[in-house]
Amino acid sequence: MRFLPRFLPIAVAALSIMTLAAPVAAKDLRDFVPADAPNCAVAAPPVNSGAAVTPGGVMIVFPRNNRIAADYTGCKHLWVMQSDTAVGRFVTTYFKQGKLAVAVAHDNRSATGAVVGVCTFPGGKSVFPKTGAAADRACLGVPAEYYGALRMPTFARECVANPKAKGCTDKPS
Image (cartoon, rainbow, N blue to C red; front, side, top):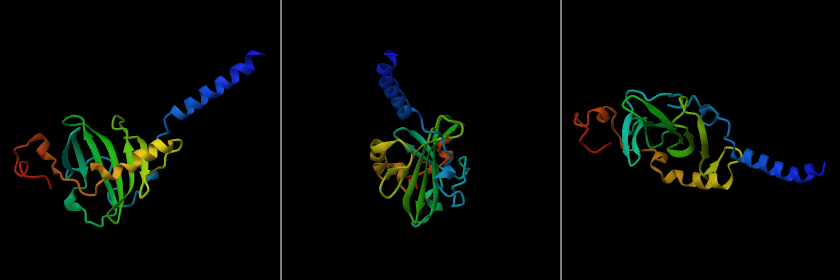
């Protein structure tokens, strides 16, 4: 019995650390953005998606700039191109009247694009439980990132496979 009192604080500490380190249960995108808002129900990149070249690779973007107004309310999606035919969902942003309201991070290695983080704006707060101040600090930087912008310069998606096609050598729009 003397073993139990000495072991108990160690066991409680280990369980606390495991709880903090455990991944948050994946949630559905619809838990964070209105499914009936424009483009929020999009699950895969439509044919008229754009391609944005970033330092980390090519992102597929929908909707493109020519499909949204400055006061747009709805979702914008970004997928990472993993190969010529495979993409992984990266982030979904929800805008209200042209202002970033919610940014949802996805696990781009997950076939379902599992939700792994959510930030709300203004204020830059993480809405996942047990994420704390570090997640809030990460959220504060999102509006300055290219994926947090309402408008993102893109090429036609066909430019990825055929960079010499008409319009692919111009500046992105």
